[in-house]
Image (cartoon, rainbow, N blue to C red):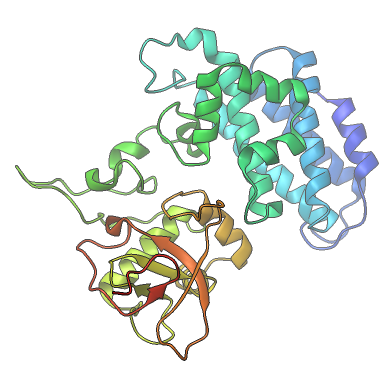
Length: 348
């Protein structure tokens, strides 16, 4: 079922690019592949309302493609959108095995079938935009305003529960089920350690150890989270601190602990370590955007994520994240250090 409107718009925004498609691929061939991908999503979305699809969903990808072409070559941007469309199609197919919203007692899933499908599609599109073209402070709602239609955004915000669950997608919340649908694993939340159930979930596919009677599990179980996600970086940092491959509290270390037990992750050094450790094909900005969405760090009164500090008086000040909850990175309270975080560390 060709969506000529979308195909025509893509052709109108097409251009010569270089690397993401094999050499010799014509503009028409690339447009055909894009059209096939959007047609696949139309079938998976399964509302059978073609007009609504063309008016509310197609413009999202047109706007997204336009935004990506400002930061990527044309062919690379098109490849990014095709990959997103294919992933979203798979997520929509999986979504129909769930009764969304999840963990919302008393809600009638039949009432929310269409709007939660729309919420899933748009959340994945906004997540793609944030990963490739979001600055350090961009919030999901602001990014949504760039690519969603006004009616589409209003539709999400009309029901407070839907909007809360849509925003929860970006914090990997298990409530609502949008993130579970996106990763196609409704059991992912059940696999995370109990001690970190509120703030830091394990990645899908991890296996949590079973605590004995009367014990509280503090240490995350062995897992292999998807490289590139914020939780994958947290897991790598935890493992590095535990096995000694990531030094801390020494001069020029990316991880420091102040005398009050707060953990300081130097930016960008801590993320550069994660990129090397996980062999990520991503730049520091993209990795930072993923980490920012975890919301496990302290913010300044102005809403900024980065604080400044230094280990010794003669050292230059460095920027970094402050984690006040030791259980995010440590199985036991970390040994305190001499690092001073400006406006936070007790100096007496």
